[in-house]
Amino acid sequence: MIFLFLQWLVLYHFRAGGEAGSMSSSEKELIKRAKKGDVEAFEQLIEGCQKKVFNIALRMLGNYDDASELAQEVFLKAYKSIKNFKGDSLFNTWIYKVTTNACLDEIRKRKNKKVVYLDEDIELGGNEIKRQIKDDSPGPELKAEDNELKRAVMDSINMLPEEYRTVIVLRDIQGFTYEEIANIIKCPEGTVKSRINRARQALKKILQQKKELINEEYVK
Amino acid sequence: MKNCGEIIELMSLYIDGELDSETKREFEEHIETCESCRSELYELKEIVDVLGEVEEVELPSGFKEQLHEKLVAEKKKNESESKILSFRKKFIGFAPSIAAGLVLVFVAASLIITRGLFGNVPSTNTGGSMGIEYSGMMESDQKNNKDGQYNGLKNEEDSQVSVLFNEEPGATQSQKFYDGAEDSLQKEKSEDARKIENSSFYEITSSSDVPASEQPQKTYSIAATGMTVYDVNITVNSPDLEKDTDNIINIARSCNVEIEVEIEKSGHKSVALSGLDENKNTLNFSMDAATYENFISKLKEEYGSKLSLDEKTDDSEKTKRVEITIFKE
Image 1 (cartoon, rainbow over the protein chains, first blue to last red):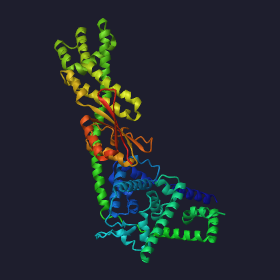
Image 2 (image 1 turned 180 degrees about the vertical axis):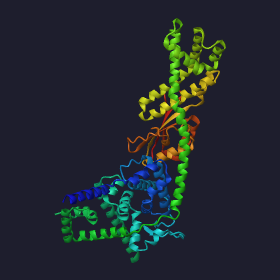
Image 3 (image 1 turned 135 degrees about the vertical axis):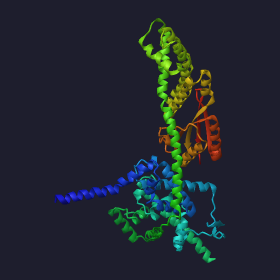
Image 4 (image 1 turned 90 degrees about the horizontal axis):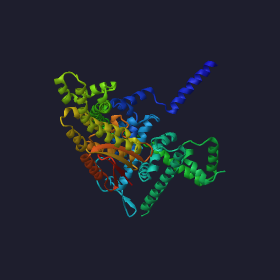
């Protein structure tokens, strides 16, 4: 009986530690080394989150090359400012926070500059047409999205306001929990909950409008 | 019983399995009876499912190698910077002891003038020997050596008086700078560490030059006019705060900021990234006039009309404080 209780106690604390997201000692050690400028330690730290950072950027920006460039910037910035990382959140959470902020900066910057991409649809009198320029590098992300609905959904994401886009990317594409998202975007969990709902509704609306447009095209 | 509006509010939580069992039961009851909510839920679920199927894209080829090169380059840059800084740190580290020496000499010399003529007060002995050892070495000590080793009281007094004249301008000079620092200490809490260092820096320049120079006057004028150093206090006010802060530091770096005691790497509390306001960072730099002009023109180039400058000259003559605010909308 006592043995069972002890076992439960150990297991409980072990799990609780994991859930609270406490840092492993090796991660702490790596952070310590990285703070002193150790490149190798830093690379080990980011090993697990590089792909995710790139994918968040890719879905937020909707462009392969920009995402690659931004991800590089994110890690360089993280390396430079790891001294400011206080360890009150997980290292990965911190990195994702830096990533989403960088993406939002980039999106806002673009709004001012009005960057036009060669593979982007252009609007003419309310109808979207494909830009008639040959795209030599379609980018691997397009291959996976030949499915029509999938393609439409991905396109619609880029039309979402950035705060909706952020939660959709983090929740529905990257699969972060509500709690993780709250930590990443520095919002109360309640805000995250309602924002995710509103973001999905907004996405649905955009898709419906798209569908109607396509139907009209067919009717003509 | 919940109405449709409430049900729609709960839809995402239901899809994500975040509802407690009671609310979940109510939700499902409503869905069974309400067709519009049912189709709404179905459509939403479909979108969420599609998004969930989006596959992770592999990192671009050469991503890690490219990043590695950038990190190594950044590390090298930092190392060379910290070398310069540690050298300066060492240099600055002498400042308090030298300053203390100066004060002692000054006090001792004053004592001798006021009391020394009437009798040998014990403390003047130490003061006297220190004075000779410190800056009298060059001139008066040589004189003394000719006459014999610190023999007569009169000789000793002579040398001490000369010490006094040698040191006086230096003492006032450093005093002046120090006053400036004290002033701003009260005004800007975040600046104090650097300011004091700055003033110490001047004390060194003037004092360490004394023994080497035959004509003290020249030495001081170099310290006073040769380097007009501005304290640049930058308030970054921008929605892209992190980025702009980095950016400004980089611009400053690209201008070869001379006395960069404050750059993060120094480990002094000087890049006062005061986290008081979420949308405001404060940076402190010291740079000479030419560098400052260069820095400002680069800032203007970078930010154009978004830049708002507010320059304020401090009460102290040689130190200027400049506040720069960057708005970005």
